[in-house]
Image 1 (cartoon, rainbow, N blue to C red):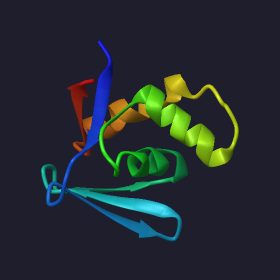
Image 2: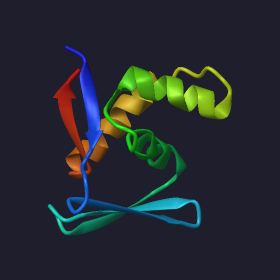
Image 3: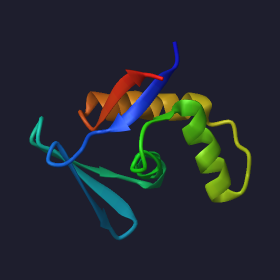
Image 4: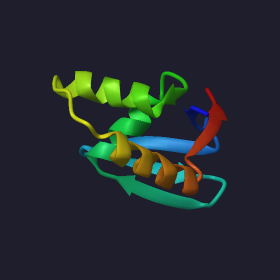
Length: 92
């Protein structure tokens, strides 16, 4: 089964760009997380709506204008962001 990832909506998750990093506050956990470029770009790609890991991979490849096989790393980051209560997973 393919999973679509969804960024939680405010007020559950609040995002703020800070000098190239992304601060993410989860009201569900009361924690703030500072993300570097790679996980931040994954979250930003979800701002327009649900996406699968494959769709995220293609959007990142377009962003850097290069095809790179980051599928395993993207799935790892998505699982971590989900465990931090920043994302929801749904059947695609």
